[in-house]
Image (cartoon, rainbow over all chains, first blue to last red; front, side):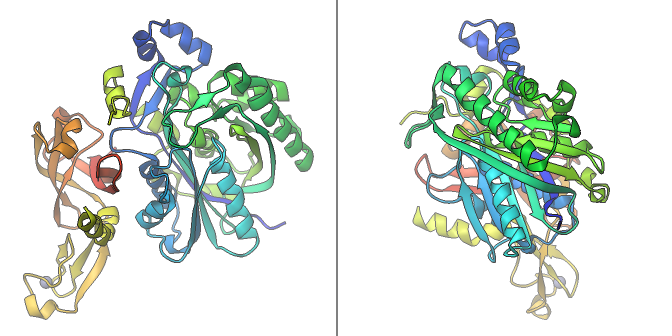
Length: 349
Length: 135
Ligand SMILES: [Zn+2]
């Protein structure tokens, strides 16, 4: 079987953080209880001059810095997000221009709640396999917004990760991918609305858990593997509790999910969520390591990936860009007042 | 407003990627790119070569803006610096990812991709380079 998979990767997390405790203090809630209930201590916040396009550019440039790939050989750019800066005008063209990949390529923005980035990876894999493109760039990034006072305000965060997909010098082969989707209205945002709405308790059992477990089981069957065959497992992380619970249901250990579980320190980066986890795993992965990843997007669907790290990871210049851990540790705390100003909560017409 | 979108579009290679040019007669590097070299003048015509600058450099001098135009007033106080790039040219840019009091002369900086401004909530968004402390 021909190796197709990840050739390089890069992530980006904005520097600003707000703690769950600070948010809770504004709304008269107990911060410690909110933190332990959600499994999230603090979340990343974009600065006033950052959005999904700037985060995507930083992640893509980090991926390029780790290799010698000529950006002109990137023949497809797909960006998954639910916070594209424009309703009409692609984020992908901004990124394509900023990394020097234009104009001889295909570009499209994807949307499927938090799983649009993994859909972008699948489509790059397919195009490489079909021989249509040499390299594809798949990105999942978001600057998630939550209504003031909503439970989502404690977790809605900013960040993203970029993956160059190809079949030369593959650092992590994508052996199998499997998807599962149904029409499930657990979380949505109507056109023209700034903040999302959600089905409260409905977001758990019939949505997140059903789709991830169904996708994971389908993938294990397709790959002929068992949970214990994997060194790392990554699940979509809307909070710190859900991925731990779904791992346990499926028979994965807390040790397997630890390296990819970033949500306690940065919050839920939506389309970036499972992908910043994958970037964090690739930061430390060794040849032969096997990775299991299942994303989740409301609405609803999951994409699963069975990945094997190759010997080429030792040749990748991982140190040419900061690791996810370095970006998590490089932070500046802000107050709720500054947060409100930076995230446009004070906006009026 | 239309004119400003067109002008921005023409300058995208410089603003997104800090692409300058080099006089192949004397070796001097320019940003923004120039038609001819002011030192070699006519000799440099047709000998100016496009060059991708590294985006790395150091702060030569800076000032803290406390009173800004409408586009930037929600960011005050913020530092603006003259950055000398490793290739030689000096450019003026905003310094981000650090507190104004932490900006120092000779501090090493690198470029970062940010929103520069936007035409209100309905107009175009303009992206480009700013600089941050090198880590
Ligand atoms: Zn000259």
